[in-house]
Length: 363
Image (cartoon, rainbow, N blue to C red; front, side, top):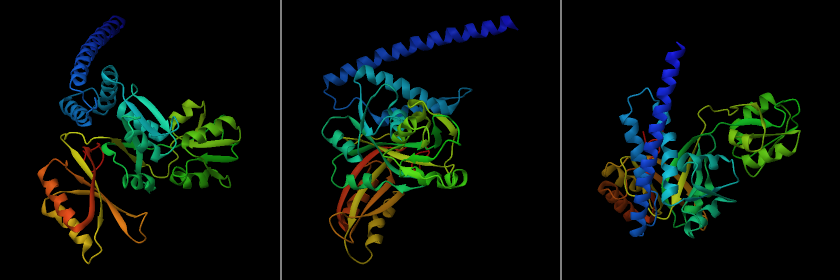
């Protein structure tokens, strides 16, 4: 038995060596690709549709026993490391470090990108538009709390384009220095996070005040400096600030997800599974909503989301944010947009991008 085990381990060691050799061969090809892109003066080295199609293809090819769910994170890191050899990406996000937006960044771009935490969603847009960052990552909606209004409002005036989306499972932990519930006299977290675990807090920490912090990471920082404080935050924040877990997964909704958008300066080329986001204002006339939806029906374009927001400059007038399947370069969607323009005050294409797995329009 011992000899068999040693033989199996030797086989694994040999395979690991071969994997490393293949990774280095891949890295050399990535360097050559980067050189060609520089000669062509490519505006970006990162092509979201190419990456997404690669991961989907590998998942289809996989026959096991390697778990299919592990393919995406493994290849994300391989791609991230390869991109860093071509041209390191600068990614702005709503900071500070260890927020859920930071986690979404790492899920999308891996560990080899350069991450730039900023203080507001508007600043993320500003960094991308002014070329201070190649891409930005911003929250747009949560399954419990709904849309992030500030994100939608920024698209009204921004020239940034949506180039990708990330779906992140939000797991909230109660953290403090001791790991004990008895020492807690105050709980801190972001105003979007606290309502997501309100029932748990009321049942398990009755009478303990829940106070707002600028982010879940800031809440963890407060708890790290105060023996009587606790934070509701993610595991990454707990690791960063050296906190113990009092209770894990305290969110009231077990299907608690946040959708994040990746913004850049150009719409990426189409992939196999695409989504498009539009912004428009309807004309003030009878049947406006019907006329708005009709072009999508006529051209068999499937809608996945529609959201209305009041216009900031005019009282009682609204703009609509719409997600649909397909890419803006495809004829059915082009015809639908043309029909939409005929019945709207204005129409703005916010972006066409690879649809995330787990979302309608993805897989």
